Image 1 (cartoon, rainbow, N blue to C red):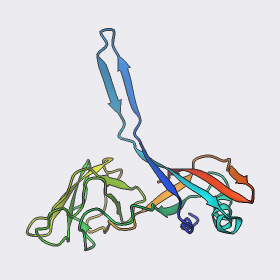
Image 2: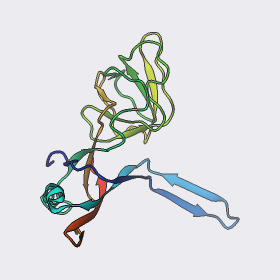
Image 3: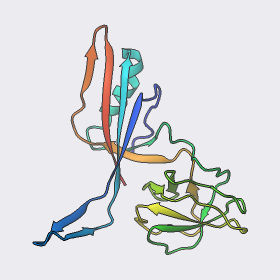
Image 4: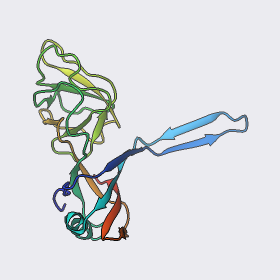
Length: 199
């Protein structure tokens, strides 16, 4: 791990993709059969347009220091720093040995509708995998809430582990070993950086 990606200047655009490999086969009568291993990773492409050499230099140096795909780093995605929901506390995992696509949580403000909304990202202390909330979540009178997430939990979090709902750090690595920068007169840099989640 080599620290946090410099986000000054901020990318002019971010593309987020979800990769969930499946095996699809067709029988002779064209019925479809699908299998999945439950694997998933986020792919991120960050673009910068029209940077001066001085603006681009910290980004260029950080990327080259990754030594191709060797190192990983964290990045908080612009435009996704805050949840859409009204979450105002630091919730916790409620119970050990959880698995699947539902995560029991506690420590929310009581009886709040829309704590997190579909499309919000969350992280779990002690894990580097980032999950997406796929249905709006609300708390009950005791401050408990069950989050519907994708993908399913890659590993069972500890009871009481903190949830990260703001400034969720993605652990990423370069998607390839070659880095290309486009330079046009008078020394203006345009740069597209493909990244993959590394957990």
